[in-house]
Length: 110
Image 1: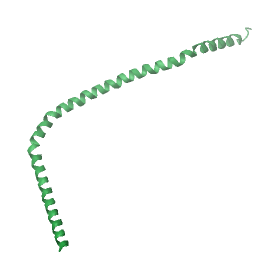
Image 2: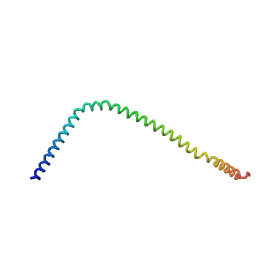
Image 3: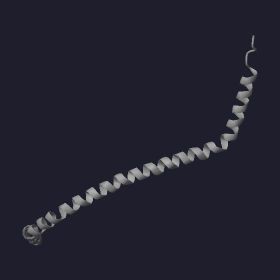
Image 4: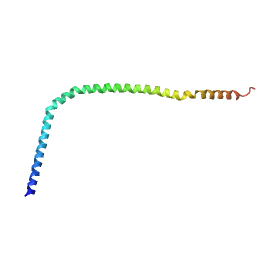
């Protein structure tokens, strides 16, 4: 007898939960339909603003890419200059040695 009562309570709880779930779905659908005009009005107002925001950010992004490119190029030139400047005395010495070697290796005039 106790097992039958437990089974009955379990079935009753299942029916109660199913009824509550259906009520919750209906309540959600009613609220969704109730607030649908407000949501549509919000999107009608917000969509142009979102498009303006997208285009402004796109223009700013393109400008930022240009600025980063120019600054990156300037930094690259500065880095190359910083690396090559200490080598200038060696380049001058090599040029002098090459010039002397070429001057002394000239063929004799006939």
